[in-house]
Image (cartoon, rainbow, N blue to C red; front, side, top):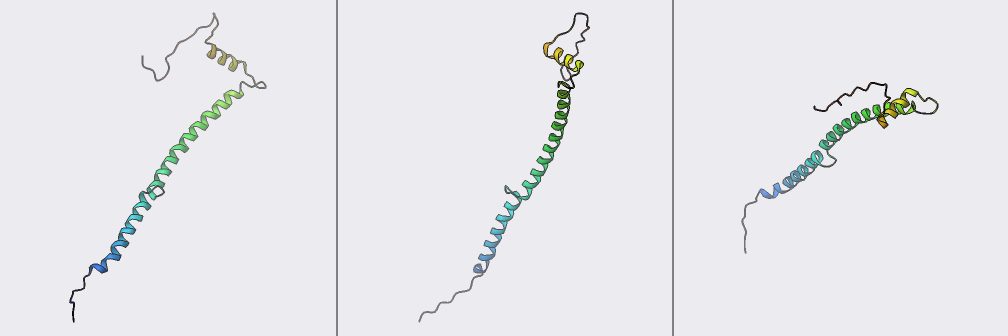
Amino acid sequence: MWTRQHRRRNTGRLIVPVISAAFLAYFGFHAYHGEFGIYSKYRFEARMAELQAELATVKGERVELEHRVQLLHDGTLEKDMLDEQARKALNFSQPDEITIMRDRPGTIN
């Protein structure tokens, strides 16, 4: 009769905890750094704040342009506004007028 004497190893007891730890580490990493993770949420919120500020600026410019366009409509046509726009578009002035040339802001002489 053959008898086998062997010592029980503790490595069998470590297989399940090691696999579980690796599994949790993998999903934990992707929960934070993944495409829809926590870090992505913070980046998205920061980008959203930037775009909200840009939207507010563009809306302000749009309101200003709408006001200027409304001054050119038939019912509320202002002759000064029409004259200003025509002179700007045609680069035109009367002979008896004085033209003052100014540098554009942000240009270097």
